[in-house]
Image: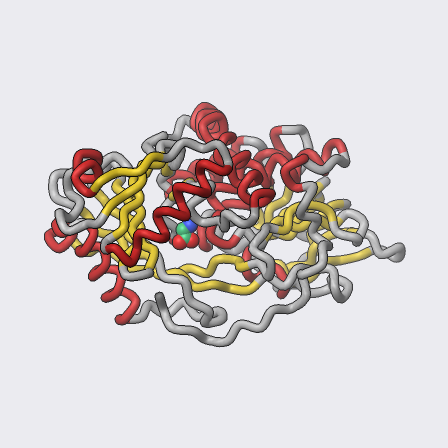
Length: 389
Ligand code: GLY
């Protein structure tokens, strides 16, 4: 037997780590099963915390969940830093969204309208005003929008701090791959079996394995949401000088493609991201790298002078209806926390709170009330390969 705990968390990505830490802070004993905690989609990501930019304005309930998530970030980062003594790189930096040409203006108009509809601050900028916010932006831009409420976190510093916080809170890490849920004779959670055949006993299990969540065996049919992998290439560059090259997140619309550049305090710049339906493929493709670098240069011409550091492809857990799956399932003791798609980092603190609330009080956190994990629309969505955008 590999261990016993109140709760077995499957998945040590940003969601699983945050949930494990929050539940441990509230006094539960936690075992976290993951062969490499702190990696996954959250390691590849750029670290943008943008509640409105990546949701549809036609989904106000979902957008309100994202805004509630964003509002928790400053306190969450402060708590994590205080618990670990480690920096997370959280910056209440704001973002400037820009349209490269007139045909990209419509996206900005939608962004402005969505912020206003939700009562979030956003203001239109001329091209020269954009350059007064971020002086490295191209002089050839069309226009922009300033979004003071968008922030950034250094996703890798965050993951490192979460691993440390879990260890400090007594979370037992089992560095194995979870294979199957174990149920007792009444059909309630009894633990999780690992691929090596060990069993971690627990009366609750939280499945937070991102796009891999539906692959956990032993779960009755129809219980797990049909999340799917959505590939995203992300490039890391480094400007000379070892200092942050611009303060705001740059979010750009480039001939219909959405790109972003996130500058970090150490001079590195993260450029993202493609959105591709290619199953569990994480190959780095030349065309995606070229497209990201071309678009980065169109937005910020000096990107051409920066050192190339790395390009990785991660797999976001895509949800059939675009909303996450966080909370209890109909299997007694079984919770899920997945389907966060492009917003895993943003939604980590609020998802952790929702899981911990359920485990300790049996209640549903109000922003999640509209998104029960067994809602209709969880049935399998087909996703054939598509081109990088
Ligand atoms: N949240 C950024 C992305 O998914 O590309």
